[in-house]
Length: 238
Image 1 (spheres, helix red, strand yellow):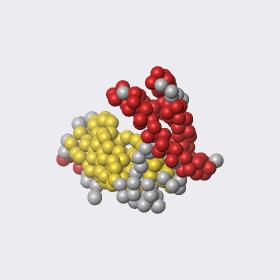
Image 2 (cartoon, rainbow, N blue to C red):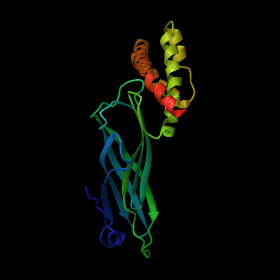
Image 3 (spheres, rainbow, N blue to C red):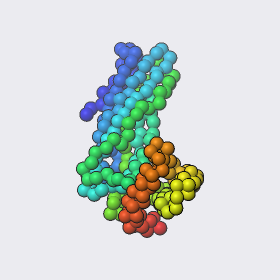
Image 4 (cartoon, helix red, strand yellow):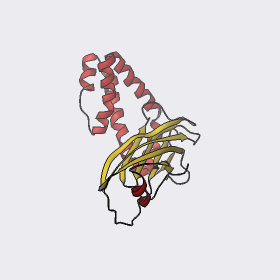
């Protein structure tokens, strides 16, 4: 797909509003286990003194590795000719349930970039920037414990797992409803671990304590089955 791009000198003389569409480009480097696709569109509204830029985007990924993925970290950057850009840090962690199966496609990122208003200089000969949409796959962990990418980028996510796992073990061992609810409502550190437990708190509010306990048990069973993969990446990071 070719980018639709018009130099600044034409936009000022011919249109008050322009839209540019560019393909999402994979900047991950060779050997990435994910194939990237998608587009980003930018709209720019010109006045005599300024240009207002905004955008929307959608990026998809497909697992082309032949192995199930349980952790993926990526960065997504979009920017229009006169701003309207954004950066997304993407984390998908299926250590406690699910996976990204071989051949599976999923939405990696979608949304709108923030609106930005920039001053416009009619006397400037400097061309507008080329609009861009770029994805970088930083790290992938497969279900068998093998990895792709930068181990340092995944340290926070890997270190979080034992904290969550221990919390699930305590919840699973709760002797009665009251003890389970007391443990469930305790805040744990770090904050990312506590946010993970919010999933079970929400289940308890909507569907009751029995449903939350069953969900804890399912997550614990899956995680216990992946301890070998966790230990493998922990050894790499030491």
